[in-house]
Length: 213
Image (cartoon, rainbow, N blue to C red; front, side):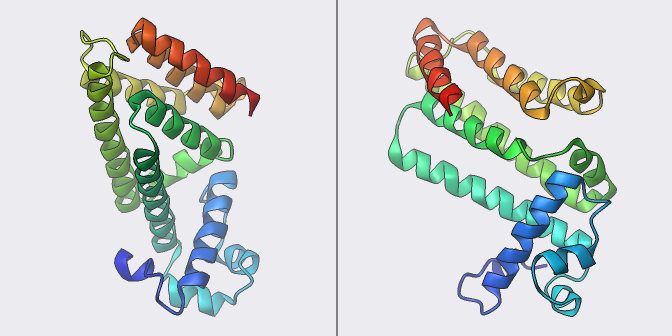
């Protein structure tokens, strides 16, 4: 699959491709990948099954398109933020807010099922690693802005955070708490721990506005 051609906005089939990706993404996130059929996706997208297979040869290729589209959306979101503010903490917090809103609709089964598609999962992880690298660089810039402590090894802390997140994915804590509750608890506790007094004050102001939403 050529992602450049797939997401070419000038291509005649672009609107249909994006509609299918949006429909499939919502279904995969809400119900997992395994339970969703190509027939159901075609029906929800209001196209024929034949048309769907002309766009994507199988469910794995469609899943890959969904992952790539999500990663591109994140990249565009970060670019927009960078054009609007120079505050590192504000950028990081808005990225987390964006992710939390996405996670409201993601069922644990999605993370379990994606392991069934090793090539897609590899690209999914590559995107997470790239995001983590960007976050570490943001944190280092935040030190210069007086928002984060200078005695923190952000690569180690960010690695530990990702591993803790993976532990939760493999646990039964989802029987008691929502995905969003877990994500928020990890992120905001993490940010408080690495912030200076100035950073904590800005974080608390952000949380007040965030909880109003």
